[in-house]
Image 1: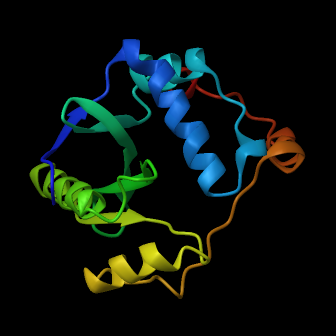
Image 2: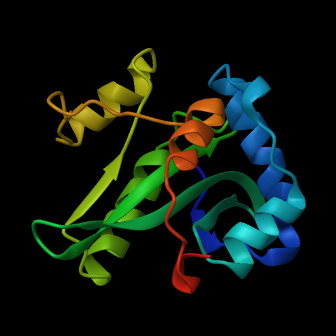
Length: 170
């Protein structure tokens, strides 16, 4: 690696830079049309509500990428799981080992936080990343199929619930 990588938590006032990276990442994944969030969404959901954490990756004091992660929970084991939602390094800075360094940092974070696992998803077409993950001995969860409800389908299922949502969940 030519330059040393610094990994740090993003700050609230850096919401515009987070949004910029999210848009760049969406473009890379050919999903730009799906980006609907704005800076206020980032401030509210990441910094105020704490739903996720954002790491900035810096080389020579310049932010070159980001990672977004959060914690989920393993019901069978009763411990937290660190889940990496997104990792993006700008073009021109890839292939220098920075991504591996971030993954190692998050693995260490998972251990410090007493997590049982460190998980993430990868698009099937992203062969370079898959090769890196397999080289690190990460396990593809072939028996699990990811499901999602959003938009009209989410509205329809939520509409079938006649229960009040308690204050904790609001």
